[in-house]
Image 1 (cartoon, rainbow, N blue to C red):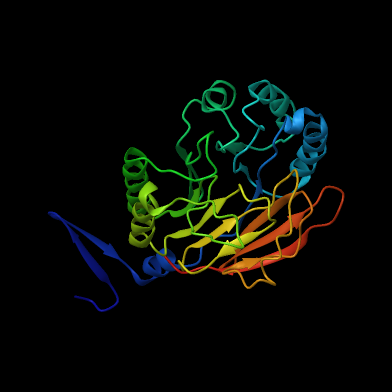
Image 2 (spheres, rainbow, N blue to C red):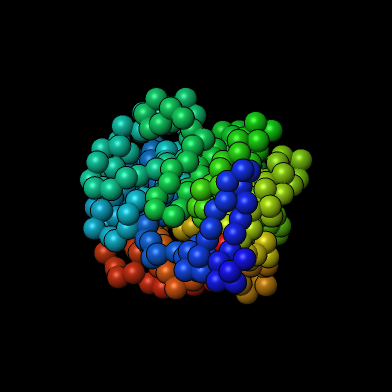
Length: 293
């Protein structure tokens, strides 16, 4: 065999991969940017405040650089399904695709009626597959995956691997354990946590990150399941400083607690996260190094 060629046998056929092809497969992906917003909570406290803030946030999202928008849940507050059309009126101001997932304040039936019938889904953009899953219940702050969801996630990741796609996983409630002084809300071992991590381990480092909302603590994250990053994003309505860094809580909590959204750029082998408060310039929050698939 010519040492300049790599030959892989597939059944009765033969595929010849030249060195330049191998380099292309392992090369860092092309730059990609998108926007993350979460926890808009329209109808919060039966007032118009969340709606008015959303009407300011949506045009700012429209003006920001990014190919698409991810909304990580709690679109409405307290199951107030009449707020979905109010949310959609603001979403019409965003001239790019917006993909939502339900949170524990959302009504799954209302979500399906107003936003998307197929709740658990994925879409492919260039070299990236974004997986959207509902892991929240209306009657709990905890997270849950059913056995059917875990099986579907496994098949979806296997298919992405076969197509040489990188993966970004999105669900409202974080999977990562977080105890005091944190919220203590996550997917417990008996609710699908172990099965989720088995899949992410199998597909490491193809999975770039697992994205979540739910916490209202600004940017909160962990890197101990590297190369996958686990990140909770700032709420668009309100955030609280729980002094996690000063209490030496595991992981990190960036010192920015205004309401807003996050600009995400994938370039130069890293996830670059910049926070954008309405009416202010973007502020760099975190640079997360990525593994090579």
